[in-house]
Image (tube, rainbow, N blue to C red; front, side, top):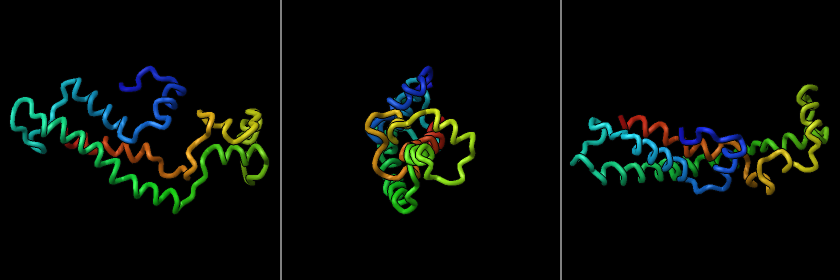
Length: 151
């Protein structure tokens, strides 16, 4: 529901150079605004509105998830060195990538790319680090712990 009604362009812009904790925090704020409560079996509450064991804890967990997963994700990025989609599309458009099915080659050729960044949503192109694994998947680890800690 957080991005309900977003177009592909809206979604791309929403994650364009955003602060790493933005979307996990938005998820938590959304759930709290809907009345979602902490699971008392997992996180005992000291009062009806336990700020420390709800808001502060969820904020800390959102930051923890990003900070714990990020170093490993970046190590995998540099270890695997997987090309970014625009690098692959550019290689296809230039005819330097063998084994590409004709239907895919035709679609990319019809895009009449002038540079690799033409394949991205951003004029400056994608970040300069390899694409895999995506840092947004690192941030989305929040979905796991939120489901455990909240009812």
